[in-house]
Image (cartoon, rainbow, N blue to C red; front, top):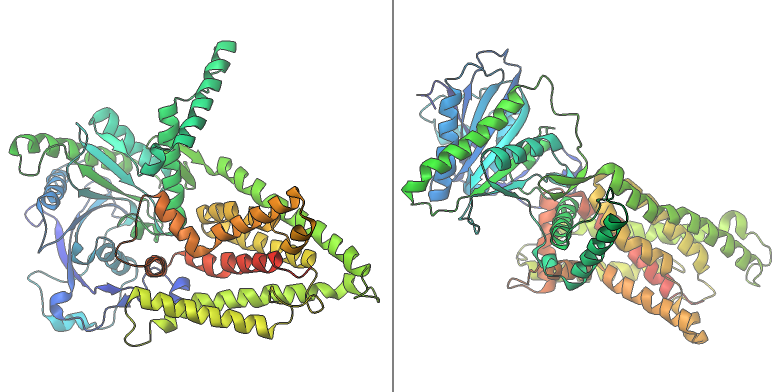
Length: 585
C-alpha cells in the first residue's frame, strides 16, 4: 500500500465475547463484551490504506474490505487479497476519482465481522483514553488512525471455494442486523455489471429443501397452467411463470424472509448498516482450483473489473443511494418484492385482531351480566381488569424469562449448552408455577368460580398480540410477518376444549384439534425444531434443548430483536392461548 502512494496505518482491536447482557439490546453498535484473560498475542491487527481522490474534497469515501487471516490464510483468501490489491494499485493512478478510496484488510482470525466492526467504531467514535493495547508494544508503522470522508458505500470481497457450476459464481449477501438491507440500487448495479459485463453467474441464498418440494411444485404447475390459459384468451396477458422459476423464487423468498427475521448479519457488511452505510458482501467462487495458474489472469481481470465498475458507479453519484427501496424481499438477484406489496399481507393478517377482540369483549359482557356470578351487573366497567391482570402477569413472566440467561451465564461451572438449557427450562417452569399460584384465575386449571370469563381473556390476549406484532413490525418487519403467520391463527381459533368435548360435534372437535395442533407448533422449541428440519439441518452433537440454547445465544450475541419478540410477545401470548384452551368453562 505504501509503494502505491496510499496513507497506511495499523489498528489493533480486542477479540469479542458473546456473553449475554440485557442492556446491550438498547446500546449503540460500539458496545461489546471483551474476552477474559486476553494476551498481547491475541489482539487482532487491521491494516488500512487511503487513496486521496485527485478530484475530490475529502468529504466522501468508498470502502473496500478484504478479510484475511494473516496466520492461517489459504489460497482463496490470497486470491481475494490479490484481486483487491490489483484494483487498489489501479485506483492509485487514475484521475477520475472524486471520492477517497479506503482499503481495509481485516484480520479475520476472530471472524470476519469483529475486525470490521472494531475499525468502524474507531472511525466514527474515536476513543481518547489510554487503552490496554498500548502495553503491547508499537508496530513498525505509525499507529495514528486516519480518516477519509463520509462513507458512500462499502464492498466486501471474498473468494470462497470452487464453483459447482461451469462458470464463475458470484453470491451476494445483503442482510444486516435486525432485517436491515442496503439500498436496492447497490445490488442492482453489482448484478448488472456481473451478468452483462463480466459473465458471472449471480445467485443469492435460497432454501434448498423447497426446490424439491412436491406440493410447491404442484402450486407452480397450477400457476403456469393458469398463465398459459390466460395468454390464449388474451395475448397481452403475460403474467404466467414457469414452474422452475416459481420454485427458485419461492426458495429465495423464504431464505430472504428467514435471514431478515433472524436478525443476524450474513457477512461483515452488516457492521456498516449500523452506521447507515450501504454495503454488501460479494463471495466469488471460481470454476478453477486455486493453484491453477492458467486461469488466474482471467479471473483477476474479471473480478477487478467488476469492482472497478461498481466503484465508478458510486463515484459518479452526487448524493447517497436514496431513490430505490430499503425495505424489500429478494426473489432473485434481479427481482424483489417491495414494502408496498408485502405490507398488504401483514395488514390483512392483523386487521382482524382488533375487530375480533371488540366482538369477544361485547359477548363476554353479555355472558357475565346474564350469569348468577354477577348479579349486580357491574362487569361492563371494571371486571375486564381481571383478564388484564392475567395478561400483564404472563408478560412480566416473559420478561423475566428473557433476562434469565444473563444470570445463568454467571453460574460457575455451567458452560455446556445442554446444562444451561436445562437450568433455564427448570427455572422458567418453576417461575410459571409460582405465577399460576399467586395470580388468582391465571392458571388454566383454576376453578370456574375464581376464573375469568374466557371470552374477555381472549379479547385482552388478542389485543396484546396485536400491539406486540405492530410494534415488532416497526423494528423488524420479517419477524413480525412470520410471528403473525403463527400467532394470529392461534389467537383466533383457540377456544376452551371442555365444551367441545362435551358437545361431541364434529365442528367443535375439529376446532379443538386445530387449536391443539397450532399450540403445539407455536411452542418456541418446537418452532426451532421445525425450522431446522425445513432448512435440512440436523442436531450437531447436542440435544434439542442444547441446540435451542445455542441458537438463542447467537441471537442475543448479535443483539437481535427477534430474541426480545420470542420472550416478551410470542411466549406470553402462547401461554395465554394455553390458558384459554384449558379454561374451566
